[in-house]
Length: 143
Image (cartoon, rainbow, N blue to C red; front, side, top):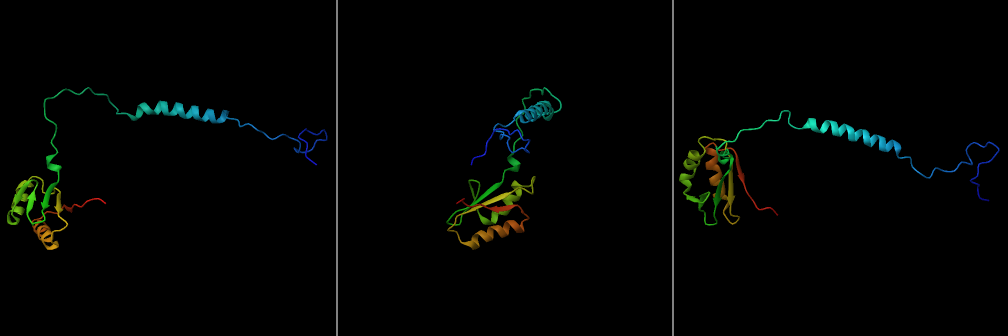
């Protein structure tokens, strides 16, 4: 009933062959070695082109103060703060204009308390928009 795994002597067309039970990994190893050599040759070329020994300097690092966004906070009782400094709403735009005179496209972040009236927030936003500030964002808590 069962088929014999022994080759027959009658020249049958492959019926008697044994199935290959092992995998030839030699081509795989060859390809991996070629890839290894290619990466070993190209990796040094990906670094900076010229090695330079830079001189020492006593100069201070370039301050990133100009790119820091200004934070305007609106407290629950309607007070306006620029950073830690309390400011009246009438003085807000002149103060921000003086701070950003060198960087007119500086970002402004507004942090308003959630219990604050929507109209008060819009009043501050409208004043900033009328003064020419265009990069204004409202901050919120992340859920």
